[in-house]
Amino acid sequence: MAKIDAILERARRGGRLSIEDGFELYASDAVEKIGAAAHEKMRSFHPEFPITTFVIGRNINYSNVCDTYCRFCAFYRPAGHPEAYVLDDDAILQKIQETVDVGGTEILMQGGTHPHLSFSYYLDLLRKIKARFPNIHMHSFSTAEIKKMSVVSGLSIEEVLRELKAAGLDSLPGAGAEILDDRTRMKISRLKGSWKEWIDIMETAHRVGFSTTATMVIGFGESIEERLLHMIRIRESQDRARAIGAVGYLAFILWTFQPENTHLPAKKIGPEEYLKNLAIARLMIDNIPNFQTSWVTMGPEVGKLSLSYGCNDFGSTMMEENVVSAAACTYKVNTNLILRLIREAGRIPAQRNTKYEILRIFQDGEYAERDFVMQN
Image: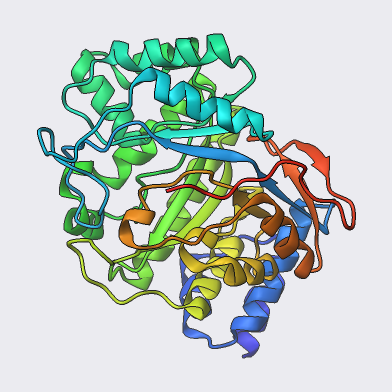
């Protein structure tokens, strides 16, 4: 226990933890103690505590056609499948209008790696969205989608990102990271590319001027070493972003793999393991300011608990979400429920934008005038 105490004290004082420190933390059963240290680490980034933020946003899955064939995905359909779809522009614009009508500020638009959509499709769609909704923040497209756009257009990754930025893309989500180590990546998603390719695309985005987020998915049967390497690779990438004066990764989000309806059976991660991993990640990744809870996969009550294990943010209201829902994970959270859960955790809820700028602090007893429930 003395060794764990020394590691946690070093983290509290701002010292950087090594992979060996990470192994010690994983080997310890002092989950609450590790969580308390992670909570202190979070507070060092957030003097505004106990304010806890969330964003009103919508996930729009513009298509489910994908030729990457990830074994863990229950959402995709191959081209030509009777259930394959591409939403028309008017349907997408209507979904954005519904988001704006309830005070939403963020659109997370993602689909599969569609082999038959031209690069101009994405550029034209972004221009159309920004012409009608100039203030909506387009936090969209995974690294896999960016790579596919490069392949179909013949442009470099940097050229693709610059054209997307000019057309109206504002930032990139961290989707597709899963586990940043090739042993597990080749097992679960052989065609998605190496961990270094994910990092390279993100770092190109940082150089172009995008902020991004970083994610991690546990529960694929990955080793503890792979989890720690993932954290360290994200941390080192953020160091490189800061070295060139870029914003880099604004937030880190830890998810758990949902095996239902997929081709990759696995044991589901329970609440205690999720919280322990979350706390260790908060201590290891010492240069990303915001950590989001994962209520979509773990449920609202565990989401509330995570606010004491390193999280400062409750994520998105997610008016619509289809990818995780396709794996039979369908926790539905509306704005006013988020407000209640944050208050039950002893925090003060505040609506933010994608840049983590606070737009509105909700006072005691104050609720959203217009509410919605996540739609499937």
